[in-house]
Length: 262
Image (cartoon, rainbow, N blue to C red):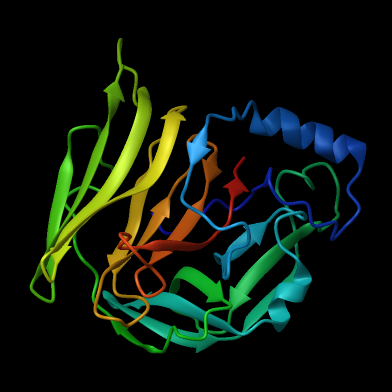
């Protein structure tokens, strides 16, 4: 679940790191197929405060080599335990199995943290995230269909993730959901919170997926990593943290990164 695809191409960022031929792009588009653009609404700022990356090989326009100069921390897993630790990040040229399929070129970028344990997420730009262990919350399901809910408790506070929408699946459709909304609710110090985390008008054989639940920013409240993609050939890890949340919000989106697979 935590390992993103080895070959990707983003549609919302263009970083002209390398020259790619028209033939390479043509083969890439044919291999990737059609990627629709359903309406996706995430409560966001105009500019995210954080850079988000995952380890592995990405297309030339998804990663800027300058990112290696940033100060990074990562959420890692080792022997069943999760932790946050500072890490260096190397970004080196790599073979892109899509764009470089018919050539000997290496137009991709490989993101490699210096910490060698399993990488959940790499984060830059948030000085308040400190090193230390992180206790995950185990959910029965990482995908919440409309009408489903997941309950968990932390620091004597009960939280509920729940989803609404219209399930229109017929004839064996895997996921055919319209007007999907995912919420997080809790009552803290007598104040009731019920925050909409994401809205997606429709999906193409994919669903919002809960990748991780745990206190990443160290404030004693749970944070989330969601894959907010609406398409089976796309992944969009999105980081929600509780520490910067204000008003009636339990969480705030601080960064996301979009990848498209083979």
